[in-house]
Length: 205
Ligand SMILES: C[C@@]1(CC(=O)O)C2=NC(=C\c3[nH]c(c(CCC(=O)O)c3CC(=O)O)Cc3[nH]c(c(CC(=O)O)c3CCC(=O)O)/C=C3\N/C(=C\2)[C@@H](CCC(=O)O)[C@]3(C)CC(=O)O)/[C@H]1CCC(=O)O
Ligand SMILES: NC(=O)c1ccc[n+]([C@@H]2O[C@H](COP(=O)([O-])OP(=O)(O)OC[C@H]3O[C@@H](n4cnc5c(N)ncnc54)[C@H](O)[C@@H]3O)[C@@H](O)[C@H]2O)c1
Image 1 (cartoon, rainbow, N blue to C red):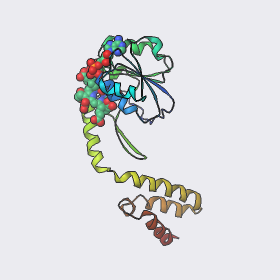
Image 2 (cartoon, protein in one colour):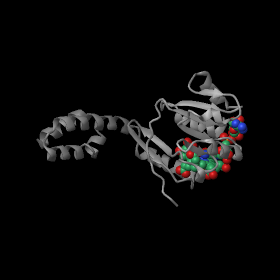
Image 3 (cartoon, rainbow, N blue to C red):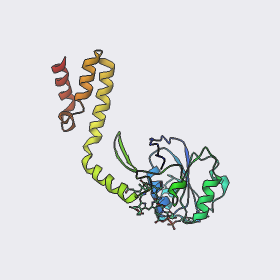
Image 4 (tube, rainbow, N blue to C red):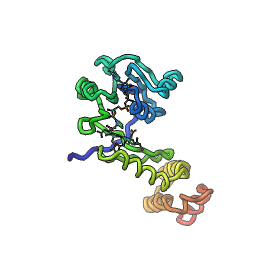
């Protein structure tokens, strides 16, 4: 088996085409919301939830059967109909430069959607390479407990404080000590991180 290459994609302004409007399409669309993508759903029928998103202007629905022209501008394509042959046609109609995932053919897909959890700037993705999406979901739930909501504020502190250290601290040994110290329990579970950082800085200076 050839290993997959994991990346975090930025979809701002990109057109993402979802062919099919059923339960799977609905889940994939849910994962795309808030990522800046322009989502186009191509399907004669869509679920109630997808209709709601259309009426709120969150996604565009082309109420029709799939044709090749529908995906000319697409950066990324989800073939998610309940028709195996049609899903394969979608894959074969795409250019080599378009990323296509086929809902019922992991081996024939360019990428898989991983299970995912987000805590502000922290993003954790889990993939089983198509072996068991259920296991991926189970691991996500375990990680959601380990990395709880408090990580969002902690990551903001790390971001801001790291930027400050990189800009203000010239001495490379002190810089390394500070960057290591902020990633310890002393800062993870602390209400007054900024104050604690000032104390640490004075200790190490
Ligand atoms: C992670 C997640 C993301 C998302 O969908 O956003 C996701 N599937 C999720 C759930 C889920 N999917 C299925 C079940 C029913 C139980 C079961 O079959 O296990 C459940 C469980 C549920 O519903 O809870 C059925 C299923 N899935 C695929 C097939 C086709 C096949 O295997 O041939 C079939 C059989 C269809 C049939 O019955 O014929 C294929 C794919 N599903 C993937 C992703 C990609 C591989 C990811 C990986 O392996 O890591 C891949 C390859 C392609 C892709 O879609 O990108 C999301 C978990 C969210 C979470 O809980 O966090
Ligand atoms: N990848 C995954 O995570 C995953 C999970 C479960 C199931 N699946 C597979 O995904 C497929 C879809 O499952 P589902 O539960 O969403 O099915 P569904 O029956 O709920 O939806 C199918 C959708 O395809 C649309 N469709 C049918 N013909 C079309 C055409 N010619 N052009 C455009 N749209 C068309 C229908 O209107 C409908 O909206 C199945 O093959 C299933 O095996 C994948």
